[in-house]
Length: 272
Image 1 (cartoon, rainbow, N blue to C red):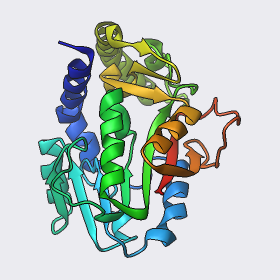
Image 2 (cartoon, helix red, strand yellow):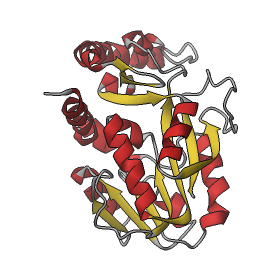
Image 3 (cartoon, rainbow, N blue to C red):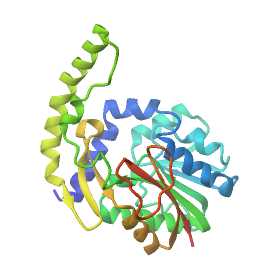
Image 4 (spheres, rainbow, N blue to C red):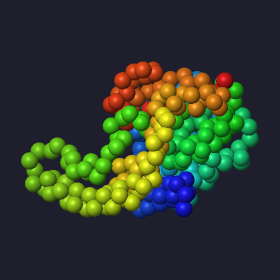
């Protein structure tokens, strides 16, 4: 099995797992201050326009984007999460669809396309290009694309299973300490096993990399990118990068800034 097919299989398995369904089915509100800042930045520009929510999962972003526009459509490629989203938000339009093929939507259908929670990173480099090409196709002229992507120079890159040994600081409560220790004892062997078997897919390129990620107990393989590399890729598909926000504090960043504390970026780009 090639690297591309293996990455797809691994990530789909994580989204469809019991823990994946439970997490995405109950998640709510913003992922981080950067997402809140990015959506606030685009909200007034696209208010009332047709919105496409890609990778909706269990519906975390439904209330966030429905507040921007009642003309709302959601898609996700995981059938189990589509069903959960429909249960969580009856009455909304949500379809099972892969972002690499959104041919069911006509050209220039939407004023905003959003792909949250680093969903773009879950596919390989060519898949990423295909998705951005689809964004450019379905967006109206002047429409906005908003998405998040892992930072190649951030703290999550090169994480290893020792990440799970860092227990949260709590008061000297024996029950809490025992629960934390039990969580480590349960998680560490699974994370180590996944890390060792999926690290064979790790690849480094010029400006981006493919790497096993600590999420889902090292159960996903994701793309990491440099901010400048992502800007150039967007320009290739006819987008102008309007703003980039960091995940930690929602600060707006520019090329050359120190981004070493940012787990990921939130990009806002306009179809030119």
